[in-house]
Amino acid sequence: MKPRIFTLDETTQIAKMLNAEAKHSHIFLFHGEMGSGKTTLIKSMCRQLGVNEHTSSPTFAIVNTYQGTQHIIYHFDLFRLRDVHELEAIGFSEYVDSGNMLFIEWPEQALPLLKGYEVVKIVLETIDTEHRRISMQIETL
Image (cartoon, rainbow, N blue to C red; front, side, top):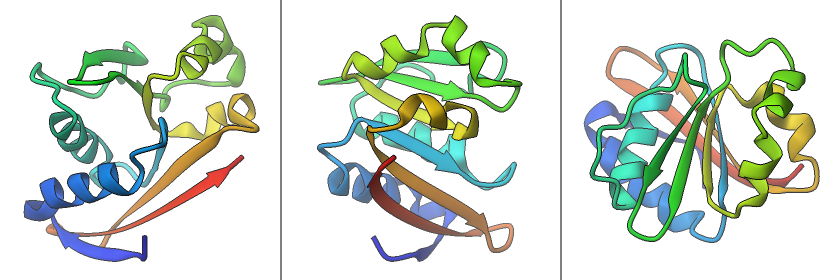
């Protein structure tokens, strides 16, 4: 996907596009500064995948689990983690190997545990209060 500028009102369309373009992938890495819209985009992607329950950032819980129409979705927020050992302690590799969908905010700590896996890297940049730039790349780490 080429980088694209969108308004916050277009988040649903962006979510549909991401789900369609990466439909064979199950690990999504969300990069972007605080307030760039990572959680908002994940909420919209979850709705597109049939999640009817309330979705929120798992900042303190580290991971939230949602049931979609066809997938279990694990939403991680790794902002507060200090190192990869904390991820190992919660059994992160089991989540990865489950084949279920993983949406990971602040994924830097997880990268060593994702070597060899195909991931969808999504980068969000704040342009102004209403506009964001998004880019997506599918790659093997």
